Amino acid sequence: MIARELPLALRLDEQLSKTGICVREDDFYRMYEALGDAAAQHRIRASNPDRTHCRWLKESSSACECLPASVGEQIGRQCPNNPYESKRELIETVAEYRQLISEAVDIADLADLGLLPGPDAITPAEYEAARVMRSYRRMKDMEFQSQLAAASLPHKLLT
Image (spheres, rainbow, N blue to C red):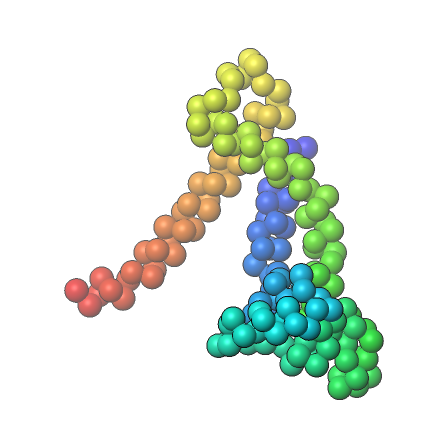
């Protein structure tokens, strides 16, 4: 089960981390925490004047959950750009896998530090989690190295 479920869980978690932003508001998470508090949202905008800020949130400090009248037919609905709404199914699916991911990361960290007991002292599921996480981390390291190489390529061509 671990060999099948853990890679899927890691892939979905990564997908969620890449899509969890609002296209209308660069400070979405901070603004969402201040939902309904116009003064706090104003302070956030003032501290980041060069960033993109949602005009609907300027009009109504609760626009993420209840669109203002200026939107028209969608008045009172949840904003379609709200990542918590538009990615609800993905968020819920990843939440179901959160414990599995957390335990697998802990096991992999122990293995990386040389603190994971030998194969005789761990369960087959723990061994499989360590194996899958090692493979996943290697893949992520190779992707990162590839990105670094691609980013430095023009520099190498110029020197």
